[in-house]
Image (cartoon, rainbow, N blue to C red; front, top):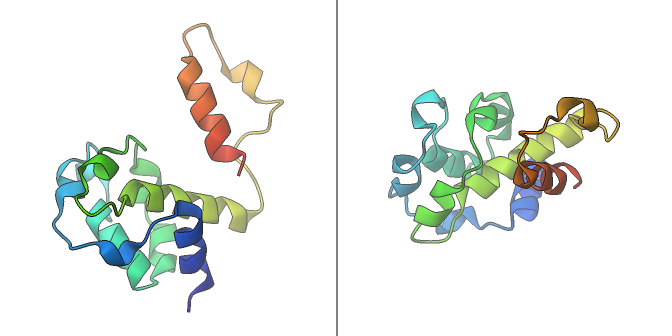
Length: 126
């Protein structure tokens, strides 16, 4: 069993085996045209433990984390949560975070939404 695939499942809290490959997640994705691995395909990659292809994919960073795919999935598979978990695996492999607390104030301006700050805090403190 692939350790990274298990870690993605654990971080996301998702059971990808529930996917029935209906494609509703990809149909609702606003980044669909920008992705090399679509949300419904992403689930299959996790099931097949092809994590190396996922971590090399530009889809990890094209995903907007809007969770339209999560809302649309009739089986509760939540592809967006799998994508987010794969990002976390990549960050952990590199042994780094994208931002340190000291860098944040200089990146902010008066127009920065508070929701963005809280979302980033939740995502990158894991």
